[in-house]
Length: 191
Image (spheres, rainbow, N blue to C red):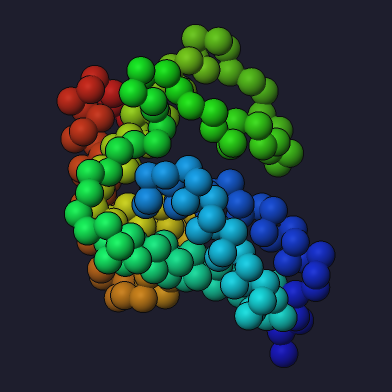
């Protein structure tokens, strides 16, 4: 029988996932405040309903809860407001960057040396382009791409989190990577 997650293990898991979960939500809803609410709701649901599950089951359970919370939010928004234009929350109208809460979070696990200033600038520019293009992907493609390549889930776990077949995950990932590569290529970025 699997050992149930302790309070400390649950807290540690939630701390380790918050940054990536926030980005998932931002890509999906394109609003910082709503994304924070979605992540908080998903974390509460996990702690409330599944906090006693074995620690190794928490990542998959959380991804399923997060994706369902995002879908619920999108359904409510669609019913409430109908069709509306979606604007990127990554830049203001003046083109200046907004405060990003992820910039102030510490990543204690990243022990690598900082990049040189020119490399760092180039990396930030490429990441901004990738984030912009990720937000333009269809929802299922973005979800599959983030679960597989950002979260590092295997195809089977991503399929469980998305509630679809493994073949669908592969198809969505393939389409997402081709779309991202083509979009970035038009902007002069080759990965």
